[in-house]
Structures are given as structure tokens and as C-alpha cells.
Image 1 (tube, helix red, strand yellow):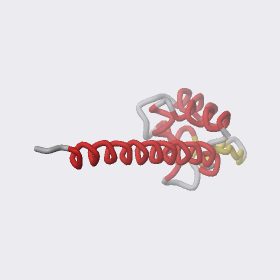
Image 2: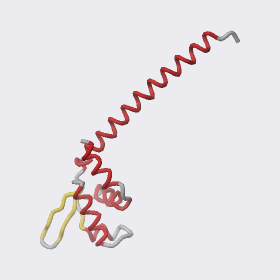
Image 3: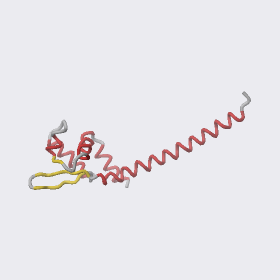
Image 4: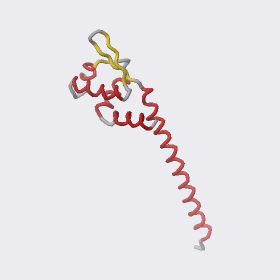
Length: 115
């Protein structure tokens, strides 16, 4: 899980790739040209970003004649989401433990003070 999550995080580290993902999330599929028309980069740059997203299994490519259409594969993000949920739960447990500890220390000081 951690390796696949790392691949997804690496692919999504680039802001242009995140924009591509956001655009594809709103559409069934799109070509590199259609995406480039909505981004401040060339079609060739979009194609390279799509290849990186495909390597991370975040997009699927479908060829229809000379046209290549790209579609988002959100299920590929499941390992990354699962990792984030797990890390969030760990931090929640640690913070809850720290809160209990601090409350117990504060409670002892207040209970034992004569002021």
C-alpha cells in the first residue's frame, strides 16, 4: 500500500498534474488537446503530464482512431486515501493521549494547590 500511495503522491505533487486531475474529474474523458486548451501549458506538456498520471494508474487511455482520450481512474487513489486516513487516525490517537495526559497534570496541580 505505501509504495502505491507514494507513486500517487509523487504524480500529484506537480500542480499541473493536479489541474489535469481536476479537469478530468469533471468530464467523462478528454483529449490532450482539449485539456491543453484549458491549461497554461502546451499540448506536448499535457501529454507528458498525462503519461506520468498514467504511470501512477490515475488515468486510463483509450484510442479511438487517431484520437487518444484520457479518463480519470479515481480508484487508483484508494491506497493514498487509505494511507492518509491511517495517518490521521494515528495522530488523532496521539493527540487524544496527549490531551488526557495534560488534563491529568492540570487536574493534579489544581487539586493540590492551596491558592
